[in-house]
Amino acid sequence: MNLAVYDISGKQVGSYEIDPAELAPSVNKQLLHDAVVMYQANQRQGTFRTKNRGEVAGSTKKLYRQKGTGNARAGARRSGTRRGGGHIFAKRPRDFGWRMPKKALRVATRMALAARLADDEVKLVSGLELGSPKTAVVAKLLKTLGIAERTVLVSPAKHDDMLWKSARNIDGVSVAPVADLNAWSLLQPRAVVMTTAAIDAFRASVAKVVAAKTAGAAKKPATRRAGPKAEKAVAAKAAKPRAARKAATSTAKKEK
View 1 (cartoon, helix red, strand yellow):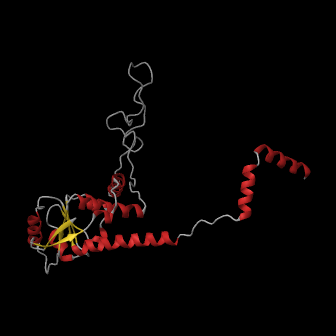
View 2: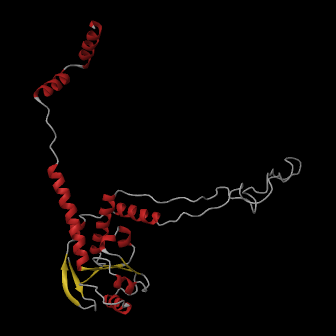
View 3: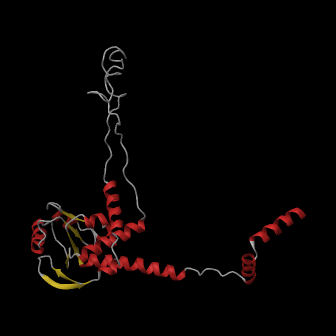
């Protein structure tokens, strides 16, 4: 597929050819779902806490006698069934975070970008170099690209302080270098703006991983073949009936 390449003013200056299958031959929705759930779970603070019946203020005296009042039996006023009592299942601070294998997260990142490319939700720009923080320049670029009213992820090849300062005041716009991309950051916004240098770096990292995997598979030693004696022993054992083998074993034990 061919993607149009724009300059920082929003004018088309060329095209860029890329095949989404180069990044990921297929898109596993379950893997993407698991990755997104993991990133969201790791963002939870888990600092909540409530009091149980042993921590709230109040007497532990039994409210009234067990029998003879006509009321339901009751204990202390700090019971969770009464107003002002403690929580029956009190919440405690906890950590919701969990981790997936690194290889799975890398594959999920590649699948997320491939899915965005296939859905035509990635805009390419030749460069985003700014001499000074200029929010108006970035806002004008997004408006020209037709994504001004959407949540947008802007991804340069490396961290650019001027670009970050220029985009941080625009609502719904976030900036992340290509090295910090993950499945959650790519799937969360409605559109992605990448520089050609950033997508080249992403493709280079994917090619490096594929080359290393291919080299590892080529170096993997072949399974060792059993020798002639071992093959004869296995064949003899298979040909000999189980009852005969059992009788021979019991005879050998008696002779010992």
